[in-house]
Image 1 (cartoon, rainbow, N blue to C red):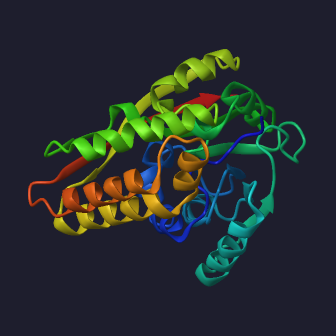
Image 2: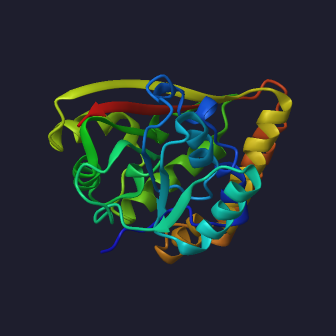
Length: 265
C-alpha cells in the first residue's frame, strides 16, 4: 500500500499550512542555521515555511521537495513574490533525487506522521545530509493535544482522525516517536525536544476552529473517513459543528503538542 496523505490539499488545508513560519514551526532549528548553508525541505507543501527557512541561509542553496506537483505551483509563485530564490521540485522522500552528502540541513515538518515507513525516510534524509550536518524533523502528536472547555465532539474528531491514519498505516501520535525512529534509523547524536502551538485569543481560536471545521467535511480526511466506512456525512457534519461551537467559547484554549528533533548526520 503506498503512502496516503491524510489531509490532501484542499483550500482549508493550505490555509493552515501557509500560516507556518520559522518562528511558529521551526524555532528549534533557527539557532543552527547560518548564511551560506544548503538546505533541503522535504514535504514542503505550499512553501511558506521553506521560503522563511531560505531567508535564514541565503545565499545558500534551498530546495523544496513534495510528492504533489500541483501544490508546488503555488510555492513557486510565493517564492517569486517574496523575491527569495528557492527551487521547488517533485520528489519522493524514500528516493530523494540528490547525491550522497548534498545538503548541510535536511528538514521535514509534519511529514513523518503520514508515512508508512518513517525510519526508511529518515535513513534517506541522512544519506543526502553531509557528515556533521543536521537532519531536523518536527511532527504533531494528536494524542497529546489538549483543550478547554471539554468538548465531546472534539474527542470524537480525534478518535476518527486516529482511525483514518491507522487505516492509512500512518502514525498520528508521531511526536512522541521521533526519538525512537531516529535511533532506529542509525542516528547517535540526537537532540530531542517538544513545543506547542497554542490557540487562545478570540482571533486565533476562531481561525483554528474554522480551519478544522472545514477540513472535517471537505478535505481528503473526510473523503478517506467515508471511503473506509469510518464515518458518514451526518457524523462529519456533527464534528464540523463541534469545532465551530468550541471556537465561539470565550474561554476556549487549544494546545497542539509537537515532538521535534535535531540529529547530526
